[in-house]
Length: 458
Image (tube, rainbow, N blue to C red; front, side, top):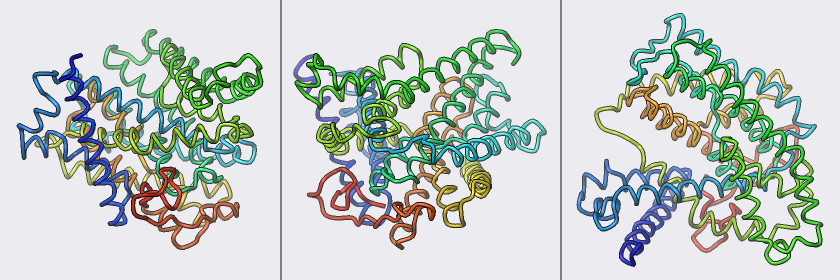
C-alpha cells in the first residue's frame, strides 16, 4: 500500500474513533447506554445518513477510488473482529465462577427451560401455521430454515453486549454476571448448531439427508470438545506454562504473552471451525485461571493495560461498525418490528422467569435475570447477517432482527443501571452483588468500567 492509501485508511479510522466517542458521551449524558450511542454513531456514518446528506464525503471515506471500497471494507472488517475478540477476551478474564459448582443448578434450570421453551413454542406455532412465515422467507424460499432462524432469534443472548454492559457497570466480578454468561455460552453453542442446520437446509431437500445429519453432528461434537477442553483442561495447562522456567515470552512481556494466548485460541478455533467469539472469551477465562480464577492477579497489569487500550480504541469502533452495517429504506417494516419485538420479548421474559422461579430465585432476582438474558445484541446481529447472506430470511426480517437486538440490549442496560442506582441486589442470594451504581463522569478517568470511567453510561 502507498502512503496515500494508508493515510486514507487512518483518516477513516480516525473519523470513526472521533464520532463514536462523541456520540457515546452524549448518550451517556442523556442517561442512555453508551454502547447504543456508539452504534448510532455508526448509523450516522453509514450510507443511510451520511451517504444521503453528503455522498461526496461518504465516498471519500469509504469508497475512495484511490483505495477501493473492497479494500476499505476488508480492513474495517478486520478492525470489527479485533474489537469483538478483545471485548470477549477481557470479559472472559474478569468473569469468576463460570459454570462453578454454586451455579450449576441454576444454570441447568435456565438452560433446561429458559432457552429451549421459547425455541420450541416458536417452532410449534410456526409449523401449525399460527405464525405466518411467508414474509420472513428469503430468496432461497425455504420456510423451515426461516422458522429455525426465527426460533433462534427469540432464544439467543448476546455475550458481547452483555459483557460490555457488565463491564461498564463494574459487575463482571459478581455471581450474577457469571451465571448469565455461563448460561449464554452454552445456549449459544446450541443455537449456532441450529443455524448450521438452517443453512444446510437451503442446499438440501430433506432434514434426514445424510449430509445434514452428518456434518451438523460432526460440527457440534467438535464445538463441544473444544469448549470442554478450554474450560476444564486449558486453565491447568496455562498455569503449568506460567510456572515453566523456559517460558521466555512470559518473562519478556506478560502483555505480549496474554495476547499470544488470545491469538492461539482464536487460531485453533478457526482451524476447527469453532465460533471465534467463544474462543476469545475462553482464552481470557483460561488465562485468568479458569473456574478458580486464581491466576488473574499474575496478569492483572497486562490485562488492565489491554482493557484500557481496547475500551478506548477498538471496542467502541466495533460497536460503531455494527451500526454502520445496518440496512434501512423500503425494506424496513415497522409492523414486523413491533410484532417481533413485543412477541419475542414477552416469550423470552416468561420462559426465563419460569426457569429462574424453579431454580429458587426471588421476585427481583427473576426480573433481573429475565430482562438481562433478553438482550440479543451482537449474536442477534450476527445471526441475522449470516441468515440474510445465505438467503434464508428476507431483507425486512433482517432489519427487524438487527433493530430488535439493539433495543433489547438497551432495555437490559437501562434496567440494570436502575436496579443498581436504587441499591438493590442483582441476586438476593449473594450479598456481593449489591453494587453501587456507577455515575457518568467527565472524560479523564480510566476506561475499565470503574465509576471514574467515561465508558460508564448506564
